[in-house]
Image (tube, rainbow over the protein chains, first blue to last red):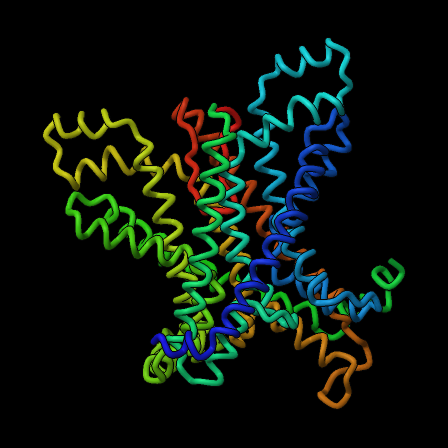
Length: 217
Length: 271
């Protein structure tokens, strides 16, 4: 069992590192886009709200695999060739941003209406109210759901590596080790341990954030 | 933009029977989803009950099982099963699978795909159901015990009807996720819609493999497939919203539950 790990530790380590970078980069994108879309969904204009809702409904209901094919093979065929890293990070980030937006929106609604009214009557603009009063509290309310989303993201990152993109992530490395050693159970076992390490790390991180910053409602 | 909307690039959709080819493949996805959902719900309920058992070893085992399978990427499970299921089992499925299934679903690797979907989703659903049951007020269980109901009757008439109602939104979200995840079996070469889309984009316009002179660019093919999923899943989520509204009228004040690790949670507006 252990020989597969010791003899192929380079493959597993580089796979783990690729998966980690993929998840980190995509999570940043998901947070930024998700915040923008959540802001759209609670904007004072009806049309902006609809735009935000459309975004969420599209990307929450679209399989990630289809998104990956659109962004990599599809765009390449259209003459807009983007690399596997860009396509992978963008797809995973955009896909997850819809979930982030939904979580944040519910966080925004948990901030009491009185605070918004107070802020507006103090002369803050709508945008200032959202940015300085509502969103900071919303973020702190939705730390646990964001943690769930991050864990789901670690798991979804395997889809990026498994599709046709040339991204040697943890799962792909396990398949490479498997095809070299024919020890399927062993190679997949160690990759599973890698994924567990990542999900446990994310869990611990968000628990810490939660105990430090979360607002309980 | 020009490339995207140019009629030349969409011509494939109404030539020959390309659209029908994709729609029939999409039906395979829906069939896989239904099969996996039914089995995963049943196993999920059993796992949820086991993980609430009063017998410590049973409880720990069930919890360990659930935590293991819901923390492993689904695609990982599917690939592993496809590679490691014994030949005899794969062939057994090919020869003995029920005849009413379409041919695509009687292939050797289908079992690995469905098993992966079931293992992963039953674990996630078990966790959702467990949270639903635990969210009930302890008084419910105590009252049922005081009334002299047996464990079975408590579960059937008191705990499950209320507990499961609370997890309807979370369950439907997970079912939508499962529906999307059926595309993952394309990676083990099951001819469902994404695989068919790739085949179509490679064969259409290629006379050497029997394609006509109309090309099917993969961008447009995948956009069409994506639309199919968006429509179906949007329909599903609307349906669950309506159920939710109806239920909340019947059981005022019941809040949906949230479960860690499930990407799409029914998060209550104010807690």
